[in-house]
Image (cartoon, rainbow, N blue to C red):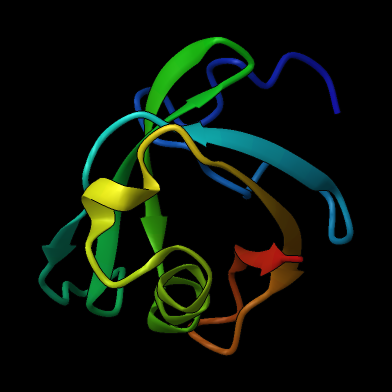
Length: 102
């Protein structure tokens, strides 16, 4: 997979990873809702740490629902939690994305 500490600049991105790759991130800040754009459906933005690098991660509704079911509806309760994701092909513009595992 190579050096992934700077994938996507300040944003954690799956585009340079392979389908099936698994990653772990540490939630370092509360989430916020991001509006829909031409490139992204409406999503949550979450501050995370990946390979010791602070980054932002975009989460779809399915991932946010899974995290809420596990840790509660308030994203401040997610801070300090480690999340594991798998890279998969999304139905939205056939792009690579992250799916929560576990």
